Image (cartoon, rainbow, N blue to C red):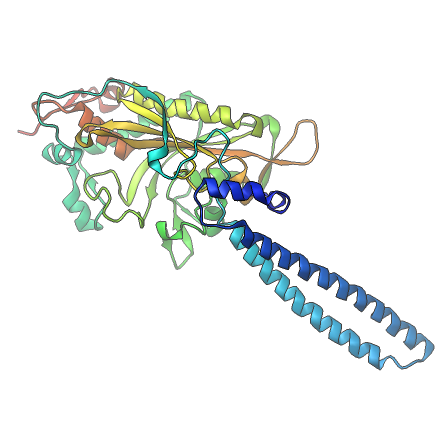
Length: 425
């Protein structure tokens, strides 16, 4: 959520940010609502002053034995009008609050301007894209041929965009998960096991609600939501708290299932593991001091890149343009892994600095060392990494002519020494 004072004092800054994001929202809506709110408050204050004067006059008339009936009737009228205006004021405040919850974060000055993914800017590339002297097979064919990925039974059990992993594939996902968590712990992140269901307030704190409700799975009887990413519970761990400055940055990681309806993804990636309703991901979340949050963003990006380097998977890193950034982010790096069957790079990690945007929504502050008024922290989040898309990359980049799959050396200890997934007899 943006600072209310920024909207009131510098609406042109917000208008420019909305234009940069190619948003259809208009600051004029805020100005009209805020103007109405101010006018109502002014009218109420005027009427309350009149009521106080009338009340004083009634008391005086009663003391002097005069007739106070007219003033008493006036008091009743004033009180009724004030009550009506108070109701109008609360309605306008609610409408204003709802509007502010739909406003995206302001892009950082370093974010390139652009309308969509075509305007993203590549900043780094690592590894050699593999070449093959045999026909490249996509991961869904490789996984099925080796008896590890079962999409038909996934559909039978739950419907489209679900899969079942068998044997070596289930073990490989667990190997990836444990490998990632071990690296994150070695790099100083605290592992958390959060709830997989959260309430509406928690979803609102990180920006999923109200804007993206159609993309979430909701348990209507309890008004709980299945988490789309561990970012949601991890960021909200300290909602409505004041932290000590010396405790910053807080570095967390968690491995959780993630649940997404993919409501806006009709017809996209309908085969394979790229876009599932349920997948497992290791997430990084930081709560940082405002002065160093962009340094922490670079740290988070390098961590995601480093995992791919250890897995010997070629990747590129791009900085998202203003029109392609997520709702809560002020700057985002996407790390994209090479997928041979698609002959392109696909996103496997997205690392974002959200500034104080989420902290304002969730009310997460810190107390400065030297005293003074508590300030909002900056929140950051990044994938580190999803096991499903990682498995896709390992299968497609590691495929051999005989149909086997070479396991990256970093995962061999987690696979019990298995170096190659051999074709079935």
